[in-house]
Every structure is written in structure tokens, then in C-alpha cells.
Image 1 (cartoon, rainbow, N blue to C red):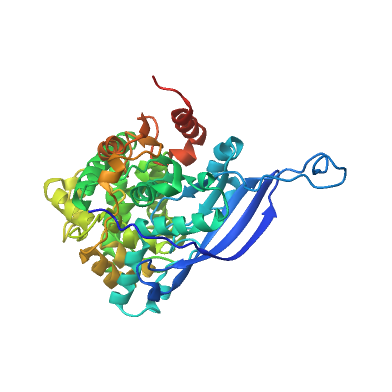
Image 2 (cartoon, rainbow, N blue to C red):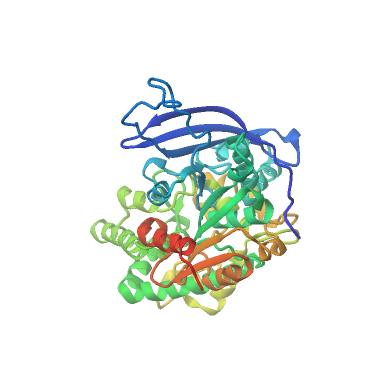
Length: 483
């Protein structure tokens, strides 16, 4: 089943403002208005925030027209072509665009960059528990949340593109997109739904598992997460005992819960979810340092200090970015009859029956009654997240409804992807813990016109951690000639 391809109206530009950054950058902030539901005009409208970065220079001599002194030389009516950055997640807005890694590669090559906060994130009508509460009960909230996936983000981008390029010659109107992680998922939906809006596509760590179910995705990512745990405990073998010490202390408290400074609770399962960091370039040290802080508190005082708990609490920003947790499995539901039904938890619980390292996913687990290392989970969202994070706890009913919802629209058009003519340049990481390499490779073979750089020397966040290397390889794919 192909995703619905609609006639997208141009976004309404509500306001814009600009300023000059240090050096030769000009940054313009736009606020647009777009439909909440592109298939139902009565659903109302939401706002999108986008920021554009362009080179700006002051000429040495005043510009002249027709060689006449003191008059103005006609300027090119149309600005540099756009490269649109699609952030990962889902659920995160863009950081400040002034020093974004993409600018270093794109601006010198003649692009202007555009950073759009996806709907529901950043400053684009951001989703929160309080905002959703105004909509009504859990059914009303789930209905709203179902509109926050990648298919509608594509429609938003198309609406903004039509607005910003109105009056341009037709051959200049398509733009380039650059998708990191979940931004790559959006890119593949864009190629499926509105390839006419695209000139070229760049993807880093975001070749979505097209055609795979949520269960298949988590079976693959649990395998890679297991490998990363084995590598972690080979590097920090003493941490197996540290994890057990901390877990045993947590269990000794009332109902196995330790209140956190800003609300919510530290439980053994929440402790074990810090393994989400193991797929990053600095992930091993981040996890180790967090454990070291908790252990030092226990060794010196016999309890966990506020400072040690605050470090644990700040490890993941799910309370401030609720869409990440609420929608994480929904982004794998490609069409009807694809309910996720808490796929990560089901796959993990089945694994826990055969692997004692994930025994903490079993009901009634006790750290003091097990032996051997306990393995961390990776990029998986479980129902337990909605029991230990204060903001997420308010959305448990809505999250359950999303997990059991099965009438999802399609996200990808495999037939159109096979016949794709838009150049796609991708970086795919063999050791990626978040986007399984083998599933990504199947996708790269599926998409016509794709060129892929594959490496086992970089991890999922290489765009930020190893920017120059990633950009060099991507633009080599674009510019080099292959005979």
C-alpha cells in the first residue's frame, strides 16, 4: 500500500525576522501556519518554526545598474538553492543553526540551509502533557498524536517549500534534503510521496527498515545491543558488579523505587535503560561515568545523593521531548494491520526467558538472586518508561492507545522507491546500534539511484562526532565519477 499523495497547499507565512551572525552569516527565522490534518481542513492549523542560514557579504564597491554610476545593479532574483536539514528523533527540535555541522559543508558549496522544527517539536506547536490535556481524553490525545509521524512532516516540508520558492522558475523550485537518523526515515517517505519537490537526498544513519515490522526491527536491534553490551563489559569488567550493587540498593528501598529530584522514580529497569547511550561515539564512557557517580555515592554515604540522582535523571530528556517516547514504535507501523503492541517490550521479554542478562525485563526480577552481568537495553521504549518519568506518566493511556492502534497510513511506496530517479547519497554504519545495518542495506538496494558509503569505523552520531569525515564521504558520492 502506498502512502496517500495529496495536493499540498503552500504554507501561510505568518512572520519572519533576520539578523546577521558573527562573520558572514545571515539567519532568518520564519513562522508558518499549516493544516494539522491535510485530509481534514476542519481539524485546524498548527505553527511551524524554521530558521534559514545564508552567506552574506558586503560588496567592496556599491552595486551599479547598466554601468551607470550611483545606480543599483540588478541582482539574481532567486537565492541560493536550499538544503533542508531533517533532525533525528522522533521528537527533537533543531539546536541553534548558527554553528550547525551542516553549515560547514553546505554553505561553501553554494547552498543556503533551512532548519525546520518538525511538527510537535522544538517551537513548532510543541507537544507536552499539559498541551494534550487541553484536547480531551486519551482517545482525543491519541488521535492528535497519530498526526505527528513522518508522512505529515513530509507534507509540512512540501507546504513550506511551495511558500519559500513561490515565483521561482520551475527548475529551481525542488530542494535538497539532509536526513540524520529519523530524518532519513522522513527522507524516504519524501521520496515516496513527493519526489517532485526534491533535487537530491543525503542520509546519515537513517536508511529506514522499509517493509519490516516493528517486531523484526527490535529483534535486529536487540542483537546489536547485546553485542555492544559484551564489548562494554569487556572494556569495563568491574561494572558488572557495580550494576548489581546499585540495582540491589534500589530494590532495598520502598517498592524498589527511589524518588528523583524533579519527579519520577529510579527503578532497576530505568537504570538498565541508560544503555541507549552505548551506540554513540562517547557512549561507553558516558554510561561508565554515570555508574561511577552512583557507586561513589553509595560507597561514601550509603545512599544516593541528590547530585548523583540528578545526573541519572538528566541522562535522557524524555520528559521534555515526549514525542520521542510516545511515537517511537509508531514510526515503524507502515500501513494498516501494523499495530506495534509494545514490540520492544514483547521482543525483550521473550529474550529475557532465554538470556539471564536481560532478566530484569521479567516480572518479579531480583538482582540479588541472579549471577553474571546484567545487560542494558538500547534504543527501545517500554511501558515502564511511562511509570518512572513524571511527564510520560501522564500520557500512559494515550501511549497504550497508540500501541494498539492498527489503522495506520502507509509511510513508504516501495514501487516508487524502486523506480526512484532522485539521487540519494547515504552513509550507513555497520556497527549502528539504532538503525540495523543489515536492514539498512536492504533499503539501500531497494532505492533506485542510491549511492552508499558503508563503514565499521563510525557510529550512529558520526555526523556530529566526526563531521568532516562524514561530509567528505557524502559529497564524494555526489561528485566522484564511477565507471
